[in-house]
Image (cartoon, rainbow, N blue to C red; front, top):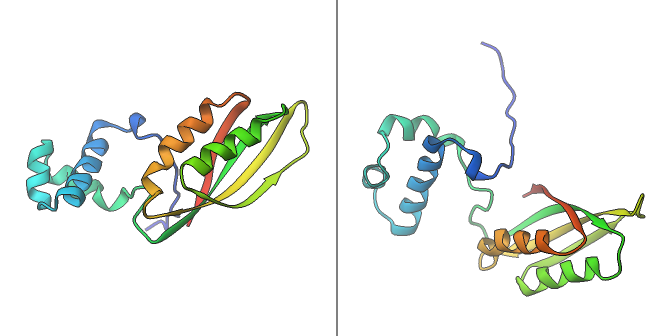
Length: 148
């Protein structure tokens, strides 16, 4: 047997096949409503074999826990106020900034890495926060590069 190493990716769930998205729905229903997996599988309309084939390989990026630290890396245009607007979005989301690392701009683009700490209360607001950051003038790229 070949020993395959595990690799992890962060992907937008919209690009996942319907079968995987349905497994995610089942897990969400079980967690939110406290019903059995069997009932959730019936409600979503997938086969039990599909659910059990994939269930152990799907974990939400923002799993429950007391605190979560994650890092985002951004490419920002070298314009006054760009980073300030981003920090305002983060502050209004209730997320704590642990570190800020910014490189000297090259060809008008600065790389910025932020380590962010969220509590259980603010964890679910992260997607909205990231969308708001992406919409800010001067943001050309944003990536989540890790979490604990």
